[in-house]
Length: 234
Image 1 (cartoon, rainbow, N blue to C red):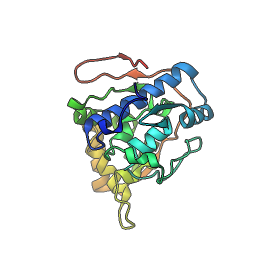
Image 2 (cartoon, rainbow, N blue to C red):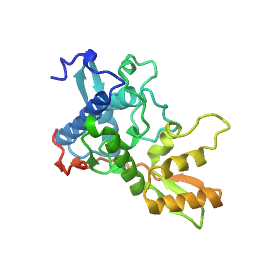
Image 3 (cartoon, one colour):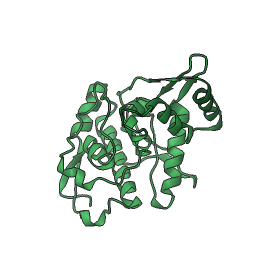
Image 4 (cartoon, rainbow, N blue to C red):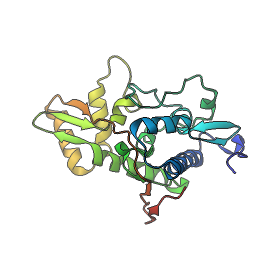
């Protein structure tokens, strides 16, 4: 059981550990949706701060799994939208369990709200890097919009919150250019062409979509390259 799991079995630098925590996180999201049903924005925030699993001798809410374990070694949020669960302190002792930092986790985690859609992927160590790249590409292709005439790029709010996961946080850094370059590395050809054009010929500005916190009804397994699919079971 999760309650009896030993921390010694979870190497924070191992791909297996990242897969474990992401899969447990999504299982708890699905468990929450099945028990509580669809939630308003306020109910969603309350659930993520309180609904928990007990493991490794600690209690982890969804917010704590995300902020202490999966994002514990990434940058703190640059902005925090209304209704977002309280951000865990960087002195929280559970950060000791944090997995290795990978900015692609921002696009993998689905907290079950409309802003992220209903799909999640079950991660497997053998194909982890491929899966993370696929999820990141699909996420950006779905959420990035480009207005060439206005030289404006609109991104998912998660890139506003965790901008310094993909950009240099130093005062001299051009975060707009760095953020676009990150997207260029992952998007499909059509978006790549538009983003590259703006980088080379204009001074683009960034906007961010509003964050819709009300929850989806259930999570759906997005499937992997091997063709798996269907509903994600909690």
